[in-house]
Image 1 (cartoon, rainbow, N blue to C red):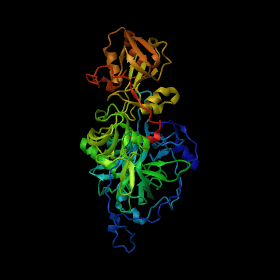
Image 2: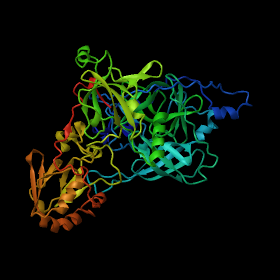
Image 3: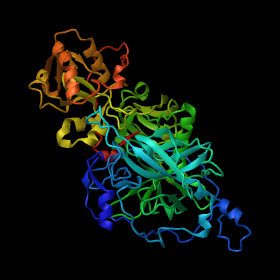
Image 4: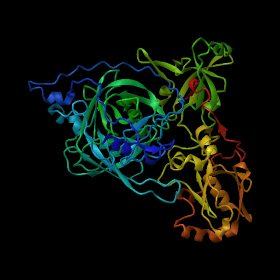
Length: 623
């Protein structure tokens, strides 16, 4: 039975997470929790039961300690046989959400997965003290129907599938859950505990980088006698925690217990943010469910679990600090705008000779190795600068700063506490002299985006040649052999030279007499059209539409060339579309007027910057 469960939960994936076939492995699904055995009664429940002679012990609130701001550093681990990815209800993986190690997302409960027995003594807690607790009534089950785009055939949609997850009430008619629970949703419904009615929910905002989504439910009946959850502070190591949700194994609410085992910055897929590691049992379907401390306060949202042959009971929770940032961002902009970054590649300064050469005080600062051309830091920093402080907080030679009383945390964390458009003060040493500069922090710009906005990928069909931007979801759908190492290397190491830049590729050729001889072309980057260097897919569309020459001349990498006759392409367009069941020769976004992302900067924008962060990965930090 356990083997069957593994085959359903952990499909084989490409490096970016798309399942191709079930993976037969011996990864353990259930393990005995090493957490404390005592139960807790939330404050609300305890207050209602004061008259009872058998009241569960209630620990007094701890005094919260002010957090010392810190900076996150991004490591580049070596290859591992384990994978980390977000799991959908039916065992699918959300596209573009793969992670480089062995974290398996809690995901959502699979529709094809059978139930399994759990060790009820250690994993399931369902007592009279908990059944009537107010915090349980605020946790709801989410039913979602997903219809994902087909990135290989961008004019189509994939077959719909259903999934379930968890969410909880936060007041003002809103619910909180994970982004991957409702990503690409065509219908979302929620059901309260003890109710037999499913209510329609609307997705207000999705933060794919932080894996948080905000829902709303308009029905007044749904909110009748509802008590929203209260957020608590960041917990301490070994604090008792309880995870509530609707995981695989049954239809009723589930409560599992554990302790906080680690607090650090970790990967969320396309970003690195603070997370809480716990040893409570987390399974598909727990995604989006709240995690509580022993006072009944919500301290985070369950979202990932680690699965490998060497580990047991490692789950991850999005802390309330990240959740609050998401909610405030939404309140400020009425949409999710993202977590900012500094836009620099840094190197640790642990070597004494390197410190002396750069005239840097002992064990202080990190070296600026590369600066993203699209970042504001490019205006105030230079390669070779040493960052020794961030907003007055001293940066150590490992790229860390003090955190709480006796801990240290990475560089990226402090930056992630800012909002898009905020200004940071950097203390730097340049050529031995100390100075202060100010940089505006903005969300990162990806040459190969991890997620797409809207429901349809961009595409353009010219004479049967299909062009689309290179994206992580497209890479997820295809194999390494079909894409080729060059495109995979660009995805991993390249930086955009300007905002709006895209890698436009030819994905396939729809055979017709106009494109004879090009049928075998595919997955090549198109560099120029009639001698003009291409900036993005919209730019290519503009060049094609405004072309008056006799021929369309496409220049690809490795000096490959494809030439089509312009009038012949126009005459064959309807026949190509009809023969392949395609409604339009371009996506809807390409019907809008073209706006040059570079303004008046001209056509010559140079080659795309390529960085190799895996060279000496232990000493490099993205911030």
